[in-house]
Image (cartoon, rainbow, N blue to C red; front, side, top):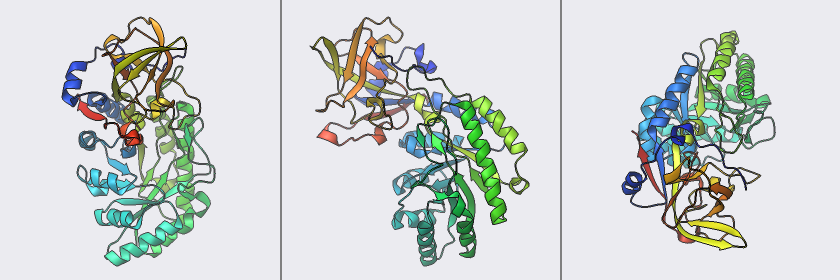
Length: 402
C-alpha cells in the first residue's frame, strides 16, 4: 500500500455537490475549480505581504478563461508565457499590467507584446536585439525588463531555475551590460524578473531566496546606476501534494520579506516589488473527477478503471516534473473521510501502463458508476496534459463558488 497526499482542508470535511457539478459540466471527466478558495488565498496572501508588494498571477498554472476573469480584479498583474496566454489576458486586464516571460519567443509574439504594451521579460541578448528591431519597425517604444538567471537557487524546490547554466534568463554577470543597451536603444526599462525555482515547501528557504533576490537586485541596480521600477521576486511557494508534505507559512514569509525590504539598498527605495504565484493560488482549489467504468481483478490486485487519465491530468500520474511516482490526494468522491476498505489502483482508459492516477492506495470500496476525486488539481492540470493522445474526449472544466 502507498499513502496518498493530504486532502486540502477546504474539502476534507465537506460533502461535494457531485450531482450539481456533473450536471453543470455535462459529464465526467471534469475539473471543478472553487473560486471561493482562490479568493481566500489571494486575501490571505495580501494580508501577509508587506504593504505595497504586488501580487501577480502566473497564468501558466491555469489559463482557464473564466478563472482568469475572476482573478483579474483581485491581483496587480498577470504573467504570461505565450501569445496565446497574452491574448487571453488582454481580454480581462489592462495590457500594462502584463508581463511576458519564456525562452524562445517568436518574432510574432514579441510584436504582439509590444503592440499590446506588455512588459517583455528578456531572456537573452539575442531576444533583446530582436525586440529593438521589431519596435523600430513598428514605431513604438517597447517596455522591457530583464529576466535574471541568479547565481543562487531556491533550496528544496521541485524545479530549480537558478544557480546553474539555464535557458531561462540572462546570467547575473551579464545583466548590467544588457540594461545599458536597453537604455541606449531608447526602450523603456521596466526592471528585473528574478526567479530561482518553484514548488518549494521550505518556508525558510523561500525567505532566504527572497533576501538573496533583494540583495541581487540592489547590486545590479548599483552597477547600472539606475533604480529598477519593478522587481518581480518570483514565487516558488509549493502546495502539499504527497504524504508528509506540509504547507508553507506565508505569514512567516511575509514578515521576513518585510524585514528585508525595510533594510533594502538605498537605490531600491522607490522600487516596487511583486511576487508571482500560480500554483499556490489555484492548485488546492481544483478537483479532477472521473467516473469508474470498470472494476477488475488481476494478479491479486484490484483496479478501478476510470473514464479519464493522463490525457487530462498528466501530473497526477507522476509523468510531469516528478522523479519518484507518488500519489496525489485521492478519494471516492461521495465518501470523503470514510474508512478505507480495500487497496486499489486507479487507472485511466489509455493504452499505456503510465496511465495510473493512484497506485495501490487504500480507499472505501468503489463500484462502477462511483466517482473518484483527485485533489490538488487546480494547477498544471488540463493545460499541461496531452489531451489529443489516443483521441479521447477533451476534459470539461467548470468554475464554481464565484
